[in-house]
Structure formats: C-alpha cells, structure tokens
Figure 1: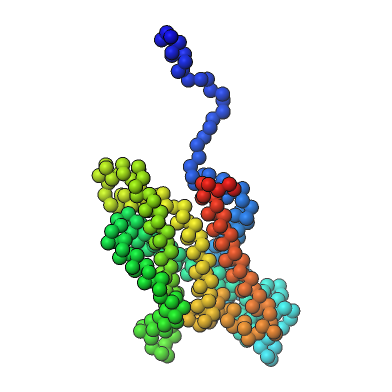
Figure 2: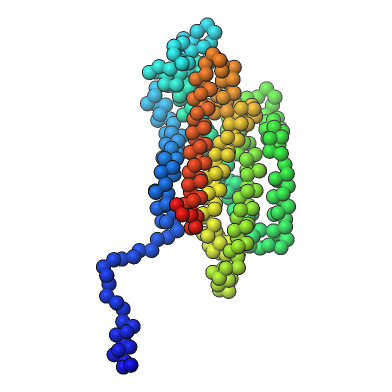
Length: 327
C-alpha cells in the first residue's frame, strides 16, 4: 500500500454538519431536573418560600399589618375572633389569633423566615463540620479515622431530645437571671448549636465512605505523585468529586431542622411567644381546636407544604445527580 493510500485512509472524514457538544455532570443533572415535573413544582415552591422569608419586611409594608399588632376590638368577650372562620376578611387573610388578636398571615410570613434561617444556618454549619471531619477520616485513615469514628459514635449515642431539654435552660441560667427576659437571638444561637452538635454525624459518615472509595483512584495517585499538599488533596482533588451526595444530604437536612425547630418550640424549649414561629403558633392553637380550627390549620398546612417541598426536591435532586438513573 502506497503512502498516498495510507494518508487517504487515515485522513479525517468530512464533517456532517452536526456538532456533538459534551455536557458536564452538572448540565446533565439540570436537564434531568427540568424534565421532572415534581422537581420543578417543588423547586418553585421552595423559591417562593425563600422569597417570602427574604422579603418579609416588604410584605409587611404592602400588607399594612405587623406581626405584633393586636386587634382586640375584633375579638368577642371570650377572646375569639369575630366573623367567619377565625376572622378571615379582606384585612386579615388568614384571620386573627384567639386571645391576642394578632394577624395570622403576617405571623406566618415571619414564621417562615425564622424557621428557614435556623434550618439553613444549622444545615450549613453541620455540613461544614461533617465534610471536614469526613474527608479527613476517609483520606488519612489510621488513628485519625479511629478518633473521629469514636467521636461520631459518642454523638450518635446521645439522646437528642433529653440533651436539648437540659441544654436550653442551663444556658439561659448561665447567661441570664431567672427573672431576666431571654432575647430571641440567644435562643436562635442555642438552637443552631444544638442542631450542630448532633447533625454533623450523618454527613461525616457519608463523606468518609465516599472518600475511601476515591482515595485510591488514578487522579488522586497522580496528584500525590506530583507533590500536592494535604490541603490541595482534600479540597481541590477530593471535594469537587463529592458535591453530588453533599447537595442531596443538605437538601434533606433542611426540612429535618425545620420540623426539629418547630418541635422544640412546641415543647417550649425553643423560640417563644411573641416571636413568630410555627411551633409557637401550633402550641397556642391547642386550646382553640374546637372553637377556632383555622388557627391550627394555617401554620400546620404551611409547615407541611414547606417540608414536603424540600423532601420532594431532595428526592428529585438525588435522582438527577445519579448517573445510573433512568429518569
């Protein structure tokens, strides 16, 4: 075979006019999410809740009622709202609270803000702690892995509810007197600290398992052979390959903290009245279940939709980030 024949054989074929563009894993995940109606609906609901939380002061200005204003003139002599379904009207879209006469709608708006702030802050903090400990344990192994494993087991062995019941009053008495008014920001900080003390364990074990499966891969060996330092190995080589399970875990941790914060406030060891909060509103509504069921309905259905949207979006995100998913 002549040289010209060989050249003709290996010469590139003419273009067909169709360009094949490669897609990154993030782009593929976004395509899967866009095709998932449940993901789009739940994601839209989450965006709406986030906008409500961020724009709460503007909503208050447009609505014309504050979360602490009381309308005692619209309550009867028994403290129950006048009118239909708990005082629902054009001025008060979700009615009024029995006893206090505060507007339920605007308090729900600020309650969303309170819950999401605590939940997202706690989720970010626990993710940072869990990622750092998990990546160190998985990559270094040996005694570092053993120590972190012992600490993780100890944290898992602590009963969360009993610990929370003991910590909140202890911290209040440590910094404030028995007759002092405990500010809301202090309770928020303590709640976030309690969630952080327990919530990092799941992320740590998840990241550790992923790192153990990655630390012997070729790209890690190549970076190690090129003299990369520990920080470069952990946060430039390994961490970018862990973002998918981390995102899924984060999206599922936020609703858990929303319900956890509401439960603690319901037990009167979290946020307290008059600060707007789901748990506080549901706790106060117990005494009015028969006379004013609308009072418990609105905060109950709001927290249900919020948690459901987070869980559905987390499941859809997990499917979208799974390269073996058929969806």
